[in-house]
Image (tube, rainbow, N blue to C red):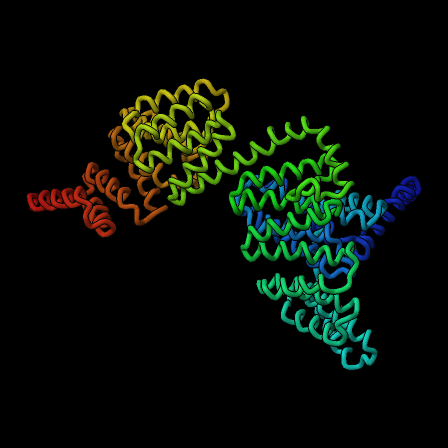
Length: 583
C-alpha cells in the first residue's frame, strides 16, 4: 500500500510541483504585485455592463472611489486617466437615465486601458490570468494606512532638511486622502506649500489641495487653487496644468454651473484638440448639453465631433471660425469632409435617435412631476426628430389626458398604436386613456389583439392591470381576475400592486365569491393601511358575508381616513338599523 503511494507520487510529482509553484506564485503576486485599483476598475466595468436600475449606479460609485483616490496620490497625474475616473464617478453619482451606463462603461474602459498601459504587457497578462482564476477582491488596510500616517507624523519634528520636510508633508497629505480624512490632508498640504511655494512638490500639493476642496464641496476654493496653477511657469503640455484645467470644468459641474462647465470643456478641446483628454471633453460637453441643460442642438454638434474623434479624426475647433484654425486642423477637416457620408450616417442613426430618446425619457419624467406642458414640448421635439416615434405619441396622449384635452388624448393614442401596435408602453398607455374615456370595449379589443398577434408574452404589469380594468368595466370578471393575478405575479413590488389587490377583491365580489374576495383586499390594506377604498370594499365584502362586526370596523376605519366617505356612512347606518331590529 505504502509503496503504491510512493510510485503514484513519483508519477505526479512534476505536475504537483507545477501546481504548488503556481499557487505560491499567485499568492505572492496577490500580496506584493497585484494592482488592486485595476482589479477594482475591472469589477466596476463588469458591474456597469449589468446596470438594470438607477440604484446600480451607486454600487459602482463605491468601486470607482478607491482607484480615483489612488490616481490623485500618484507622483505624476495623467490628465486622461484621472479625468476618465472623475467623469465615471460623475455618471455614477448623477445619472438620470439607465442608458447613461454606456457612458459609464466608456469612461471605465478608458481608465482600465490607461492603468494597464502603465503596468506593461507582462503584468497586464498576469493580472488578467490572476483575476479570472483566483478572483482577488479589493482589500484596503485602513489600519496599515493609519500606521504609516502616524509613523510619518511622528518623524516630522526630527526632519531638518527643508526639502525632505516638504516631501514628508506632501506624502502625509496623500495618506490622509487615502484615509478619506480630508481636513488632515488639507492641513498637511498647506504646510507643504508654506515651506516653499515655488518647488515642484508645492505645485503638486496645490493641485491635491484643490482636489480635496472640490471633494469637500468647497468649490470656490478649489477653482481658486486650480486657476492658480495656470499662473505658475509650467510647460504648456504639462499634464498637471492640463489636469487642473479639466478639474475646473469638473468642479463647475459638481457646483451645478452646467453651462460654464460645458463651455469650459469646449474651450479646452479648442485649445488643444490633439490632447488625449479631448475626447472626454467632447463627450462631456455633449452629455451636459443633453442631460443637464436640455440644449439638444448643441448636444448633437458636440456628439458629432465626438464620433469624428472616435473615427480617428481630430476635430477642428468646435466653436471657432475656419480662418482661426491652425494648418494641421484644416488638413484634418479636409480628411473629415471626405468621410462626411459615414459621419452623417452616424449622426442620423446614433446621435439623433439618442437625442430623441433623451427628449422622450425627459417627457415621461416631467409627466410624473406634473409638468404637463413641458412634457408636451419634449414629446413634440422628439417627434420632430423621429416622426414615427410611437412612444412619444403615447406620451402626448397621456399628457393631454392629464390636461383634460379628450380629443388630443384620443387622437395621439390612436397615432401611437398605428405606429407601434406591439410596443408594451404604447399599449399600456392606450388602454389607460381608452378606459378613462369610457372606451373599455375598444381597450379590450386592442389588448386582446396584442396578446394574440405578439408571439412573445406582454410582460409589463401595468398593461395587464389596465386590461383587467377594461374587463371589469365590461363585466367580464373571469378574464379580469386572470389579468389581475398575472399582473401581481409579474412584479409583486410594483407600485400598482395595492390597486391590483383591491381590484382583484372587487372582481371576486362581483363574481359573488365573497370568501375569495377577502384575502386580496386584506393584502391591499397591508400594503397601504390608509387606503380608504380597500377598507370600504372589505367592509362591503364582510357585510355580504353577514360578518357585521368586521364590516363595522372597516367602515369606521374608512371614515377615519376619509370622513366624507358617504357610502361608508350609509352602510354603517344600515348596520345599526339591522342591529336595532335584532334586539
